[in-house]
Length: 247
Image 1 (cartoon, rainbow, N blue to C red):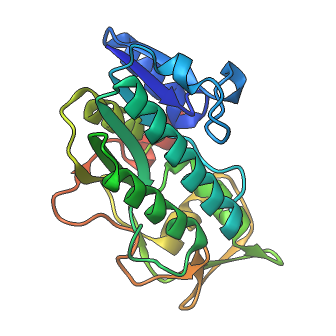
Image 2 (image 1 turned 180 degrees about the vertical axis):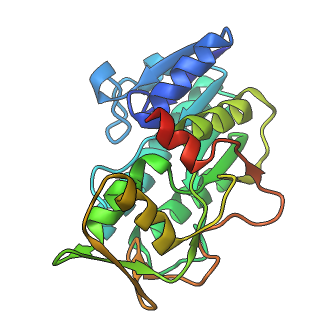
């Protein structure tokens, strides 16, 4: 089966291309580096020729509200139009747990717009909403640092390994379209502050973690369970401690 992976050279995309190839599929990475530009439409018709599935794991280069909205709306419209023309039978998109219930986040508002465009299109689809990745815990800490103090929201978080995200997206892609959404997450819930503190302790990082009841995430305040998947979600097996040992 020919499967085109938009964003195939990124973190999740690279894992996807590898895993799909291991299972005998023709996994084709597509990105500006390979001559495919989803914002202009360049290269889409060519790369989608003969494709059965398109997986979109691309991300906006900017998280500024207008820029990220423009990216996801323009890119998704171009992908859906090209898929319909090429006869692609399954559009799979990676999204974020919490999309649709955190309207004050410009990034998640853009992801909600992306999901809406996909759901209204004529192309059969599956949307996989994932929790945060272990790989980004350090970046989260850095972005929340002010004068050596890391301000974190008073909420739960249930991260997972990027490789497990890719495996779940790949399984969805080779199955029948859901024409709906599914959630995936890690095997453990953490208090936000506890997760960041564990990261700091293992790296001998002297920064202090302070829980801020009004702390934000992607620009929005959180309720306790805003970032954790609901009942029926598929949970991965790799714990944070296990991931840390191998990284």
